[in-house]
Image (cartoon, rainbow, N blue to C red; front, side):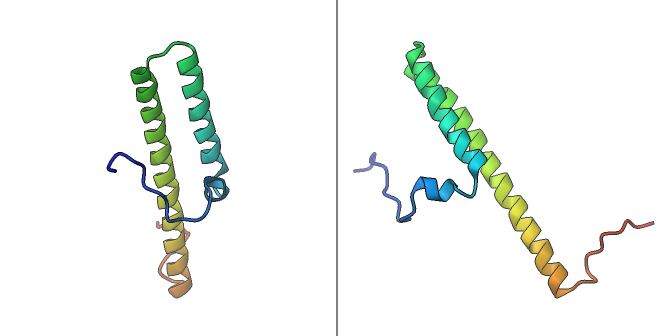
Amino acid sequence: MKDEPRKSKNPRSLDERFSKHPEMYEQMHQIADEMEQAIASGMTADEAEEMAIKRINALGRAMLTDWARARHDRSVEEVRQEKPSTIRDSKKN
């Protein structure tokens, strides 16, 4: 069916996948906790959904930012190893 979530082809659990990103794993738990508290306190489903979407979007941006930084750092390190004179750490005068 169209509305059913797709099954992941990745055999690793989310615990394993988030083990390298403990701060993001903690944020996922916080989002789940906030959802449970919001619903228990009488928030409507629409309000809880909106809150969750905002938090998950922020988490996604953080994950992509971390990925981009790591990718940049790897690229810089590769260039330093291949051509040490290309990148210098000193300031220009």
